[in-house]
Image (cartoon, rainbow, N blue to C red; front, side):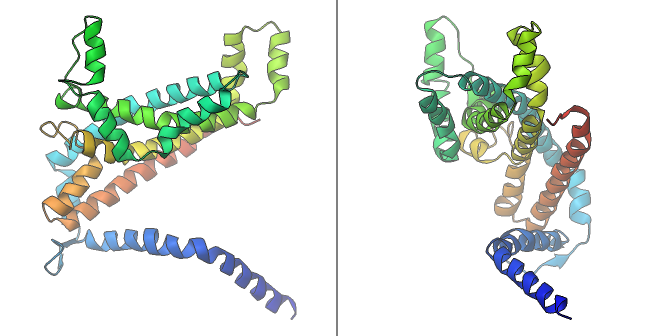
Length: 294
């Protein structure tokens, strides 16, 4: 009989400690998701009463050309962003894992963009990549190269936002991979050197396989963030020119606040959530094939 009250007391203590995080999670994540699911089954312009439409919003969006284009723009962004941010972060992590004067200062400098406002970063890169008088095209002109139109060009709009995104997020990838590098036992690397492995062989055969848990985390987080890209594109290109860089999240924004289609926007939000969930589940299943734990 004594175990019952003791168990209830322990449960109450656990619940008490969970409340500070559980309440915000319920109010600002779970409740809005449930509300979005309900709204997605209605037609609603944020003013007049909602009208039940069932799954019409989903079927309409799945066959909509604008939604398809927004998805393709998002995938194009991801295709450029993901490998570049990983390789840049990996290069920084490897370089800053060595001992040299000023290493701590450089680590802080490379991480600084991560904590900088996206609006500030996007406006800065919009100026740097200005086709007419931007610093980048000016420097290219000094060596005889005619700079592209960058964010003013349909071809270069997405690459322009990728450059800004990689510059901002590479520091985050660097920190995660740097932690992974520092967790690799030195004995493994010493054994590789004794076996006559070169620096490249030691990295490719020993360091990189043992870095795969950190790489897996970075890839998952970067993919989730990439699917939700919005701020930098909205500030730098506004989805243009002529809609050439509008991603899915901007399509959701436009449906809600420009076209008054909250039902469609909620449905598209849940479709995006389903895509991100599916990609994450696939990564979780595949990670057993390439992630190696010490």
